[in-house]
Length: 256
Ligand SMILES: [Cu+2]
Image 1 (cartoon, rainbow, N blue to C red):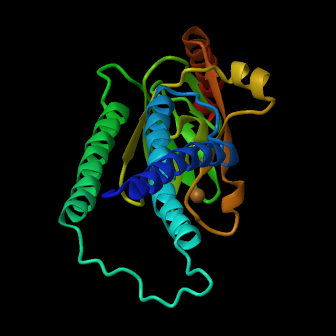
Image 2 (image 1 turned 180 degrees about the horizontal axis):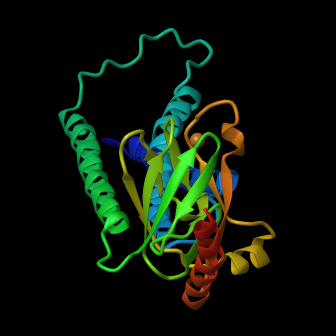
């Protein structure tokens, strides 16, 4: 804690430098590591949480590094100075602050994280249910009306529940633009909830590439090739596509 006018000057200067460094570092991290486009409601919620984490990371890094560099430069040993330096005997107030502040911060972020999880995973009473089966190395999708397709098609602005199963080893279902991700575990059915907010046509027109589902679990030699195009369409178009697929698939089933 500053005792003299000179101490106060150092204290104010370091505070200003920490603030400047925090803002710069936050900007640098966000510019250097941009997140994918936000294409689901969950991406907004999760990016907000990531954004606060980056602020805290930038602040804590600045707090440590600015204090350290300032001390090294400003309080360095000068030519001809052979003194021992002043002796300090601890500071109870500082110790209380640096114990309590991280504790409060951790509790706040734990609560914030749990609340984010609740906002992302809540169950909708009337979801669109699609089953995704992962295998080495591809995906298959099963729809409620019995249609089985290599293509993942879903309606925009509806809450979707993916039921995830694997035919062999563990995989992971990940659409980066949605942020949420879930493992496919052998012998189990896992669930993943999301609400697409953008049609794939809008996305492609804006960004010049398709939305892809990728496997995010190293699952063997051709893991890299385990991706699938995602089609997000207006709900009427989704229903029409399901009917059309059903009509196409029914005769082939009857022939068997
Ligand atoms: Cu895989």
